[in-house]
Image (cartoon, rainbow, N blue to C red):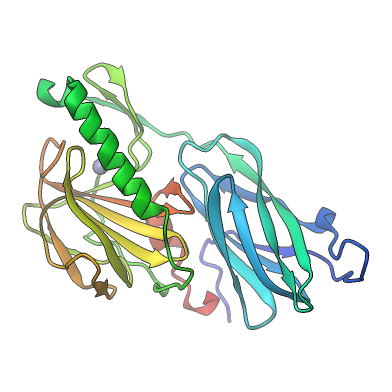
Length: 292
Ligand SMILES: [Zn+2]
C-alpha cells in the first residue's frame, strides 16, 4: 500500500481533449499547486498524448519526467524569498505526433513565518572593502555558474539522508541581524559538528564545486541532477575530488569553521530550480520508496 509521507503530491488532470485545430488540453482543469517559501512540492499531472514536457519558473528550468504510467512528474522548490501570492510554471512540450504543446501550472506561494536572530561578527567580516566586495561578487558568480547547469538525469534515489546527525543550531530561513543590521536570510541549516566530523553525501551526485570562499569557507557542492543541488559549507577538508561521482552516505568532507563563522558547524543547504530550499525538505518529503 502506498504511503503519502506528508508530501503534497499534487495530481493535475489536464483533460484528454486532444484534437487537431483545437487547444489539446483544458488548462482550467489544472489545480493550483500550493507551496510555502523554502519548501518543495511534487507535481504530477496526466497528459495523455504528450511525449515530452519541460517547465519554466521565471528564468529557471523545472525538469519534468515521463512516468511509465503515462503521467509526468516534477519537483518544484519555492525560494525562501519568493514573493507570496499567485505564480505559475510554464510548461511546453510536444505531442507524440510532434505538435507543439503548452500549458500553465498555477502556483500559490504561501508566506512562511521565519524567525529572527541577532548576533555579532568581527569587524573585519562586517566592514567590507571594495576589493573584498569585488571578491564576494566574483564568488557569487562562480556559484551561480555552477547552479545554472544540471543534467536532466536524476542521480538521486529516495530517501535522502542528512549529512550529519540532526542537531540544528541555526534553522533554515532565519532572518539574521548582524551587528545590528538586517542581513540576507539564512539559506541553509546549521548542524552541530565538532571539528573534523565526517560529512556524508545526502544522496548520489557529482561534486561540481570545491573551493575556499569568503563567506562559506571551504565549500563543496553536489549536483544530484534535474536542477537539484546540496551544499556543504565551513569545512576543514575534502574527502572527494571535484568532478567525482559520489554515492549516498560516502564521506565527502570533514566539518570545520572556515569562512565567516563564530564556531565549528556544518552549514547544509539545498537548491532546486534555482530556489534556496530547506534541505530537510528532501529528507522529510522524498523518503517514500513507493513513490519512486
Ligand atoms: Zn549556516
